[in-house]
Each structure stands twice: as C-alpha cells, then as structure tokens.
Length: 195
View 1: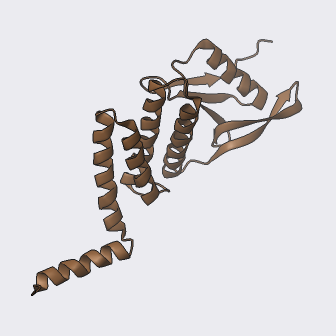
View 2: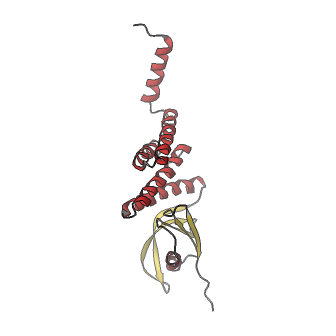
View 3: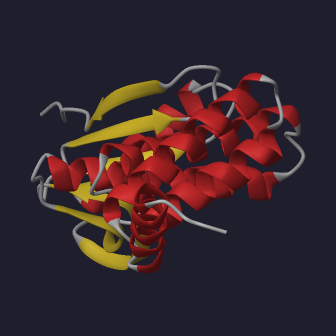
C-alpha cells in the first residue's frame, strides 16, 4: 500500500502535536470540550458537562488562557446548577464555592490585585484578640470578601458580614452569593459609631 507525502506529513504532524503536549493542540481540545460541555449543560446533562469542564480545567489549571478561565467559571456554574437541582446535597454547594474561589483568584491575579485566599484573621472584642476566623478573600489589605451559595441573601447574612467587619477591625467588605439564579452581591460597611 502506497502512502502519499501528504499522508506522511499529516501522520508526523499529528504525532508531534499529540506527543509533545502542544499548547495549540490543548487549546483546540479545550475549545471542543467547552462547546460539548455547553451543549450538555443546555440539555441539562450536568454530570456530563461537569466532566467536560473538569477535563478542560486540567489542561489549564492556572487559567492562563481564555479557555482555561471560561472552563473555571463554567465548571463552577455547572456544579451550582447541580446544587440548585438538589439543595439537600450541601457538598455540591461547597464544591461550587471552591470553584468560584478558584475563578475569582484568577481574576484577581489578572487585575494585579493583592489578595489572600482563606486567610486566617484575628477576631477582636474591645480591642482584645479573642480568636481567629478564616475570611474567603482579603483584598488589597482592606476589603473582606465573603462567598455564599444560598437561595437568597437576607438581612441575617448582611448582619453577619457586618459583624465580621467589626470583629476583624475592617471598614469595608463584599458579600457575594452564587446560590441564587443570578449572581448577587452586597457591599457592606462597618457602621459609624455615634459619639
């Protein structure tokens, strides 16, 4: 059987692309997974979509490409949708929060913001340190960012965030909820004390 020059070139090129873990090949594969995952998501096949998005995230875990960043957000949204379908499974909510945290981390890095993730911060009462608590994100050494995955932000969540500001000795924070049908966020500020 005779093989043409073009056939040999295609075989060599394919072998090189696959064998060297070429970033161009990975981007093509990532785009295919994103399209297939989006179609699975649209057809409410969330487990298949989650699998495809996880494969894409593995190709670019640091989110250095548009495909990698999109995969992070799509994965978080897919897990979030699975949680909305089964609110009894709290592990899905925690998984969704973790994926949103990873996506936010990438966005903070892209924006060149100084931040710390899950930072253990001292809790104060009457200027005395009484313990520690982890904050989801601490941005630019002055803004607390708390993430939630609940149906709707309520006054109790805002009060809790304000209490955290008081306990941390901070002036401003952001409360972000990924659990609603669309993203919810509230800016919270420490109340001004009247003299």
